[in-house]
Length: 416
Image (cartoon, rainbow, N blue to C red):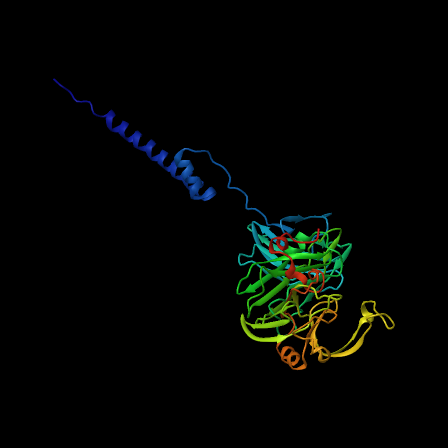
């Protein structure tokens, strides 16, 4: 007889269910605690069996001051006043920045970046100045951070200013006029100065600077300027170290326009001067150049001054009253073409020799009628080229003897 024993089985089943239910409640409680304490990320780590850890701390704002790429800290060397002061923040945003001139109390203009993580000055500082910098930032931790400091600017041993010729104030100049910059002090670092002297020509024409002396630099193209050219000269000299403690005093600019091309070609052999307007021959006239004792310089001359009347006095170059060859005369319709006393002018006293012999003291003599025609058309910067006069080349230093220098030599830079 087979008997059935079934009583223990239901009891076992009941115990197993109770244990499982208890375990489930414990797991849910642990998970709930984990979620409440560390968030979803920590819960995932628990489920994955990884270790539990606290989240990283939220960083505070860190504010720094700099001039260019150089950090400014207590005891930093004076900065170049042309270099913008920058305030930057890490782990936050800038709320307020103030840079104030310690001497005048005036604020220095500046601009905040769109992301509010940096600010920089937009106005130049001054040499030998002191500035108070104060910044307020809010960090990622929502805490406010304030930082302040002092920025000093360098004090040069000396400053140099720059004068222009043409100044940019006159209407126009001729195709032969170079750009001239004259410094009030000698420039030692000419490479730095040349880099700071920026010329823009419209239409574009390659050019180069040539140093006539430690205080004077000229700029020209390989050939005469194209008629109608606009020359923009920007001397970005403020803050530029020109050597031996001399710095550029200020920036300045000029815009110069070139008018039509007027070039006269005076030939001492034929005693005729041909006049070309924009490349076309428009007039020929009889002339008399310098005598064999006073020959005119050969080469391109540039008109540097224009006067209706002047007194020509040989004593200005050492031949005074009582000396052989002395003269002092009123002369009309004068265009200066060198500082050595050479002019194109009216010479009614030599009309009989004009076209046949050279009798002047170096000038280009014209009849009154031809002189009037010439005077009415030629202006500052126009060109008079003299050939076959028997004289030496016009010295480069004599006003604008620039065109006597071959282009390859000009590009080498001049005075050393």
